[in-house]
Image (tube, rainbow, N blue to C red; front, side):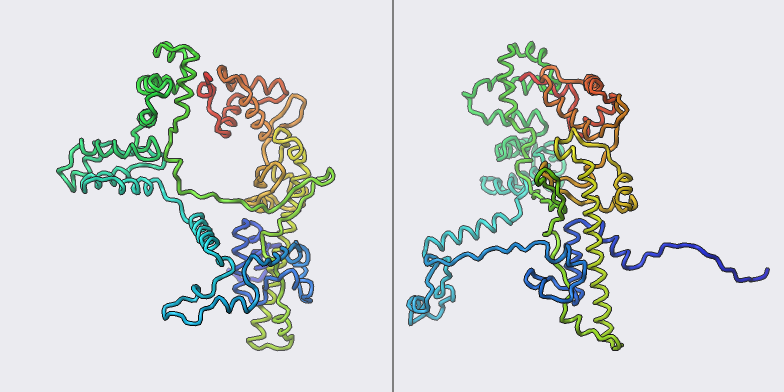
Length: 502
């Protein structure tokens, strides 16, 4: 076998560090982008978070920062004028308030009072505001913490307190017990064989009187019965509501109102009153006390209508205004190959790459958002029913980019419109053919289903087959199973569960 040398010509895509960085920044969400920018500011001395008044005077600013990264907004908050009521302003007034002889343990705050605490009333209001801020930022107690707090206020023996803690630990986030008293007895007897079932039931009844009403119930029927027991005895239709919950909860769940009126010996107006009382109860009382905190979304793009035209703008507050530090950049010497100069030169090049990647991200996001707004102008004007079918390939052709790039741009990016805040992927949907040969978006079909259900007769709700007929009358061909799939995605129950008597 003879070894030979051969030459071949071919093309190969090389992922340079600059391209890898641009792709990484492109797919980051707003929060991740802010963290990435902060890491770049901490690690690269050439990058600087420029202020508005410094951006124009700085002579060495990379082109990427001139458009989107430096001077996106020039709004500055006006300074609040100082009034005489805010506190003494002259030195003589301050000196008159300082006593000549001070005790040894005098604190600095006892002598020099701030302008906001010049009077006792303002001092107390300041303390209250500090307390409110701490309470607002503190974590919300969980349901178990809330119940343990009430248990500690109850006079119980050590054994009953142990049983109470065990019961509270078995309560889920909805407020239901996940184990029966018999199961708890088996576990407690391993450590304390003297505990009996009657003791567990007695402590359970005590916990069921805690807030929120209906907590520590075994099932839905028990939860509703506990809440009804806490009503006043003179509550109208209370006895009938207890009878329905205790004996005919299955008929109530299946909404068999005819059978329910026959079993309870009630007329339709009377049953309406009973159902109104039952509907005031909470089937999941634990949801009222939750440790979950609200997460807010920061939009990447703003869309608004000005003089009859839709305007697309990038959010200037999602990233700080970056620039090249001109003082450090001036220290770089061309012919110097020292370690210090190489360090500055490398960081300067990385800073320019980073700013260029940010500019590329903003430009790509702006192009994609603009094309989406142009295509979905009907949605912005008329709502979800006017949404048009749209896929990634359509936008990729319009902006002359690959579909994978469009997918990265539209992931975890949000658009603020007059109709709300939506993820960019929300505007993409499949299509269904119409009788006229056109196409209808699946989002528009979901909106029509929601509209039909909201206007239906609660005594005779629309079935999936009936909704299919209604859509067919509008020229939209949709199978019944497709309607069921769309309805389930909208969290709309089937027709038998939507039946209402009132």
